[in-house]
Image (cartoon, rainbow, N blue to C red; front, side):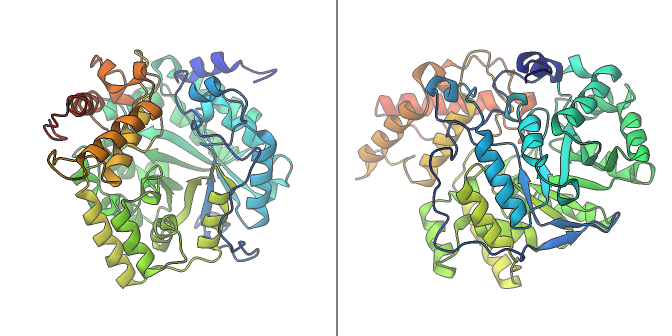
Length: 470
């Protein structure tokens, strides 16, 4: 960032590795737009929810600034997550979003390798301040940033990068993460006085709403809610979608079902901000049999729209965040929420059955957030999991070595694996150091899963598949 902290210095100050919170390797819409279907989103039809504290109307669709479009300039830079953000396209998509009623924009010092706040600030500064709400986070993940001075500096830097005098929605970022969630929470926010500092900024009006985003240790979530009478949380950000509603703990015993998280907020009348409505895109790329079932119910709606309607149907949801890299994503989501058609009870039960069937595919619950990166040994953890999940969904992870389609499926997996992940960054190079695991919001046992995939790949190469759980 010119005339401010260098990107390397800034990333070091917040304790984020060089490839963490990176933009996706797929490039953005700098040179081409993808059609979002035949229908153009209407203006003036956005669904809004009321903030019970301020009475302000917040768009049900929130713009997540975690995955911004990049320029098609340097292939190696894109692979390493260093591709330059296409500011012109960011401006264009933000303009289009505001024109169609979106007024909530969510960012963080950690997103896009430290670039997101800066680019978001440029795009929004071209609009009147009363036309948008800014949400950002105190992303002090590294112990190097747990001092009071570092926390204050991070908050002040967010104001500068976003070019605003106050933050509308401020979050303690990733509460519950770490091997000991409660100890980490206290070190990051309590012992150093940073939570008291943020409460003071709320009193002064520099923060208008204060909340936290939750990942991981449910004891920390429950504790913070037990302190609601003391802190008066204005909102809480949780992961909610039709798979996690009842199956998050079934998929990973260390996670918590969204049904519980939402219910606890509802009891206290704390508005919920929703992240991961698509589970990092997994609910927009369902296995073909499930896609056919959705299309049989509504052939004109996208697969993703079902997930967004599901999240938006719950009345205590203030806004639903979506990281919209492409204009087609933005348009499709605008169509879903302009206005929202809430799901009927029968449709909710239909999606619950879809979720139950999806669990049987045994995918790895990776949302491609890249918080686990960089790996000290160069392994591309998210790309490995994304490819494995994709092949599971498409039926290319076969247990039947004698089946008629086995050789075709075997080739599809291996060829796709080599194309998706360079050989030196594949799962067989994992040494089990465990550096990645504490940073995973989904609490995946990453080394264990990498070892499982490595053995599966080796079996495929030898044409002796012993099963995906080998």
